[in-house]
Length: 147
Image (cartoon, rainbow, N blue to C red; front, top):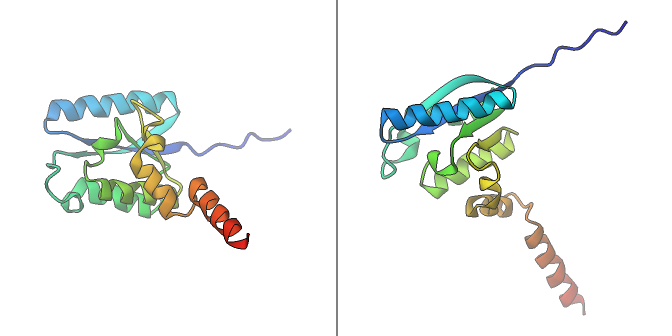
């Protein structure tokens, strides 16, 4: 008789950023409900009330999120929408790139395909050299030089 192998539960961090405690609570609950339906175990909740005009890297919640990703100690990061990470697109690209590099799933619960259709994701695809369009353009240029 074969023993059933126990699966390690998928772990997730909820990241919420808002100007009020009520909005933070709503974001956390929305993410928690979504993650429960996807069988994720919430291991940490990070909340930030930092103003977007301030440097996100100075925010302890944002810094802790980066550390969790870099330590590869989580399977996913959940936010209600991508702008909850930060409105600064350079910092957002940084987090998206880290998630891709360390195979941490970045989940936007209100619109799960949001990040895949964003300018940040397009920039990441280009930077990481996986942009199909860039590869096709390069091939066309090489082909035209040979003719």
